[in-house]
Length: 114
Image (tube, rainbow, N blue to C red; front, side, top):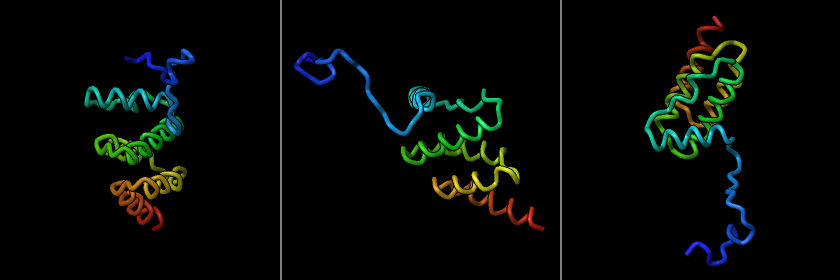
């Protein structure tokens, strides 16, 4: 059945290319879909890497409507919000429809400008 001349069988390759998502992000989201648990951000200790991965997961969660993952990402980004990270975090909140995060950014801005 699967040897009926499909492109994948003709050149012997079984690679499926998925653009705009890192391998790490993809595998962690597949684990989430199979287990219902999203712990991908728990083991990242480097703050910059954690910020970047949180934003990547937020982006994919927004596109794929993975609300549980989105909540985890928003909470992680809230914990990373500082004067230094403010602009990038607020841009991500706006771009990826993260309402909780947008609200927190507004509060953060009001309390830190006084």
